[in-house]
Image 1: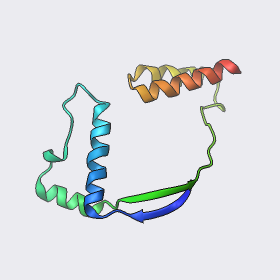
Image 2: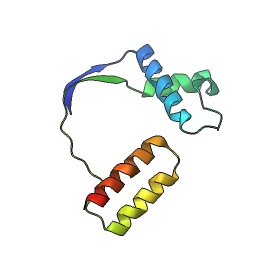
Image 3: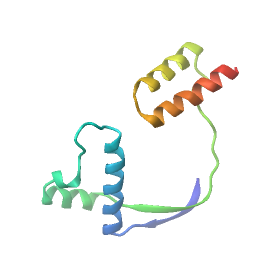
Image 4: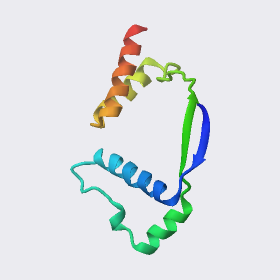
Length: 105
């Protein structure tokens, strides 16, 4: 990936942390989601000082598909089974892509 990075200010970084946390916590439902409200003000202040937020304006992307093609069929099947068993939609989608690639071979 090629692009131009820029620093986010403190409030923009906090917004990214809040949004990303909410997105990731959705994957763990029905567990009660973690939020920044669970941190003390001092802990949050310390964490915010330690996190540098950046944004990247993407100019170009070069990518390769790596779906364990260099592994044995048994290993690939094990990964597919494991991903399907997680119950997470993104992981299931990767499992289906891997399974389709394995079937094409």
